[in-house]
Length: 521
Image (tube, rainbow, N blue to C red; front, side, top):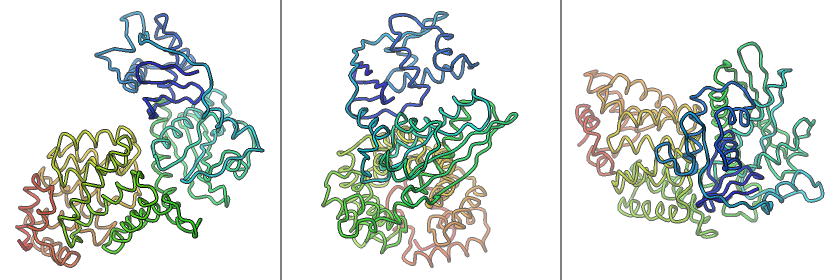
């Protein structure tokens, strides 16, 4: 069944909420809440009705219910103040008051997805990007009541992974056809048309829950990642969110690294635009002068094949941006113009992609300086994908550049939390260092600067943080050491050239410290 209201469509077969052509990320309980309210829109439903329908009579706090109602309203562009679509009637309950049209014909995509699991004679081919199915987690508690928790965990992880647009994620309905069955992951991969399978188990004992997960490449049977998570059994919904974040944060960078490592080897004679993108991403991650030049070359090859490949345009913009920021630019004006042109091209293709918005926000913050627009893009990036290190890290830098220092630190800390082993972690630590200096927290700046330097001994941002912070504290020996190391890493560094790279209007104490450190003007 599909329900249409305003510009939204709720597809109960696919368990998806759409706004126009775009899928709106929706947590499982939020989807169920919308479904129940819409189906029962002819009358008021009580809190007890919702608890019985959505949580099957389990004890749910008023705060948990309010949180889910607020999330449901937010997903459909409503709010507690406006109550345009979901109305609260004090002491009575809730009612969906929007005009709704129904369509009980199954969508073509739902039929196709269902056939993946049902027909062994029509096995789908692998899509031209990484593909994954999250299988039902096995309940090893001996307690049937824990089935709902295990199923909810799978739905949350599936929803979170689907926010990464470079990743093809099989819908929950198809994955759950394997529930309760002994499966061969290679067979699952063939029947669902995916390269990766995530499987796991849930075990409850006393006041704790232990969740295990493993990511498998079905083409080889190799285990790419495995881990175990143990949490206190307190608020069940907070626990689901906590473990979902931990699982997605662990497997997303691992999966992308695996894809980058194999890019160009799978189809050596017929490289597609997506393969060029993965190869460009791998070169970009090295962040050297030579690797960024190669990343740009590969990105432009991808754009030649597909001029509307938005994320590739954003990546190319990022290459030009890093050329500027790292002092690699031969022609800074050209790099700046190309960075702006390419991020605007990417936005024109897709302004609802978290990665594109994050790139646009940070590049604009350094080159354009429209703080209201940049904050809005950064906020949308993390709202679209709360599990993205890139989005949180860029949001941190945007807030730092516009002078919202406490918010910047919170964003950097969130980036570290969602991806604690990210290969770009040093940039988040350096960002905390920059913001801490402007807040006169020089000891904290030194602590995070050292963390960044342990990850990358040649990270110029960390060395600038340390030189400035040590100088502010009058620690002369350490100041000289950090300044000397910075000039080894970046021999052409001068304070005026660094300022000219852009974005330093709110870095007054940072600049003052660099001058105190005796670095060339």
